[in-house]
Amino acid sequence: MDSGWNYGPFGDPRDEERLRDILTQCFTFPPSRWDTYVGQVARENFRCLSRNGQVEAGLALFFMGQWFGGRSVPMAGVAAVGVPPENRARKVAFELLQRMLREVRERGYPLSALYASTQRLYRRLGYEQAGSRVLYALPARSVPREKREIEATALDPSRHELLHDLYRRGASRNAGNLDRNEGIWKRVVLAPADEMVFAYLLGSPPEGYIVYTQKRVELAYDLQVRDLVTLTPRAVRAAWAFLGDHGSMANEIKWIGPAVDPFPALLPEQHVKTTYASRWMIRVTDVAKALEARGYEESLEEELHLEVTDDLLPENEGRWTLHVSDGRGKVERGGRGEMRLHARGLAPLYSGFLPPPALATLGWIEAPAAALGAARRIFAGPEPWMPDMF
Image (tube, rainbow, N blue to C red; front, side):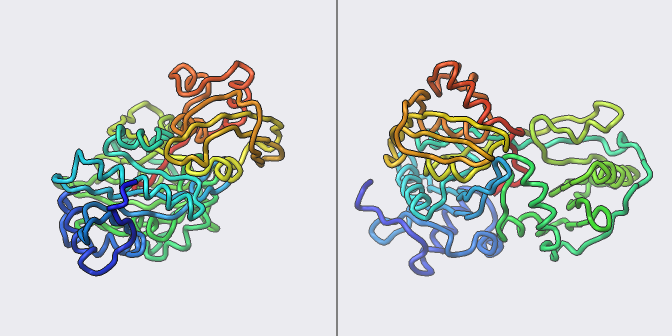
């Protein structure tokens, strides 16, 4: 790392003003939104890279968790990585991000996640694709009007703490969903400038909930689901019944789901279309902590011998043995090193995004058939996806 750089939080108000100007230029959002964004991130979670007292680049960190195997793994989400045009192609972003990764590891967060504006940069830093975020759309009038088995009760979105337990119960069943912090919850329930956010509990006691906005389109509107949790089959049917009741005025119903989404399976016809799809990336910053923090299948008794290379975080390098029993993992130094992989290849293996044989086909891991089989059983689980952006 270049010793001429200084990395850290805002030193004085001028640092914040400079980073605000950089991010405004990079992401073309109005300066009037800055205070709202600072409220979501928290001022102490911005990081600047400075030289000679001048902020040259910066980013935001969301310290939270991510669900894998029914357990929340501490994770640092990276957002708003901004480098002004005059500093690009000078490895400024690489300098900023490698210092960030060192901080994240030292703070005890074994994972980092992000949505990449350019994969080439982040792959050089050890990130790799690890899950999906897909936007679906459906003509509202194609949803049949059904009698509701359970009622929908309006909730003031500002009281989002009443949704937290329901969300955690739903998210813990999935892979890759965030264990949200307060800043992410604010992003869910705060209305865009020209819209209102509505929230409804499904059932009493609630078996799920829906949070959405209505975006005006001529004399009608598009209904955008911002958050949806359905913990029971009744709640799934109730959610569709609730959405179907908007058919007289809504043009389209839009929602976020995994690449293979079971939610539309209850519809009579295949009218759902995919309008946008992206893949988020993760980076394992601490191999031992990451493997021990996530959950595994309760009945599984397996052992996997890894040999990891990591040119940015050398503490991760070397041989590791993962013992899985009773839904937990225990990691020891040493072992046979049967499965050889870079930190990049560990990311989609860890999340379950790509099966080990596919990773071997890509050349991201090298292992004999027995080790590939053990890895497939260990990291099997639901498709990793994330409803949130950050």
